[in-house]
Image 1 (cartoon, rainbow, N blue to C red):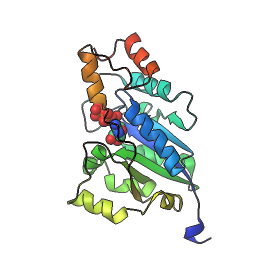
Image 2 (image 1 turned 90 degrees about the horizontal axis):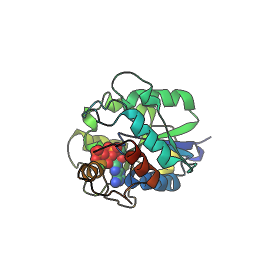
Image 3 (image 1 turned 45 degrees about the vertical axis):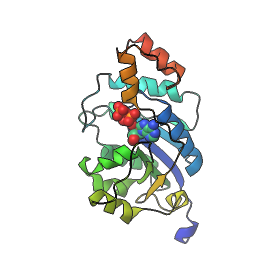
Length: 218
Ligand code: ATP
């Protein structure tokens, strides 16, 4: 079979602290499923972020909120593997595990926002990420991809023309997708909650109820 006729099934994994999960994550996730024909996109809460303060809200609470947010949407799921691994939650370790589970018959897509790409050179074994997965970058309001330096060169060297190319090999390419811009951040949500302001309509109602029931972010 020539490379042009290979059609692998693409599966996505979207890592983050999800502290808490919000409609910026969720709508982007659903739009990517549709745009890239992903069989599934797994939101993967990070237990111990290697490059930022350990969140005040436990990984179990953050994962429970992701579970509530994706309930009823078959194309989205919560992947809790990083909660089960001790030590810092390195994405490379999760990709190696996922690839072991999926085998070579799937195209694996690691999804991240533009802001995450700007920090990627600090990630553990970052240049190896593309050995295990493709990277799908979501353009995010307020953030721009670098236009010079080692990350810019890396983006350019591995950039694929479009989503279709992701299905022709299991890993190794980078695509940038412009989705519906939603300027929502978990930081802003935490700040509103800390001031006693409403965050209704920024995240799903069951997530809001969970926050209230467990008195999170006060
Ligand atoms: P915080 O404000 O605490 O940094 P966040 O809102 O950026 O949180 P994270 O859990 O850190 O959320 O993000 C997980 C992933 O989702 C990152 O790759 C980030 O770029 C992306 N992301 C977060 N919010 C949005 C958004 N509104 N639109 C597109 N991507 C987003």
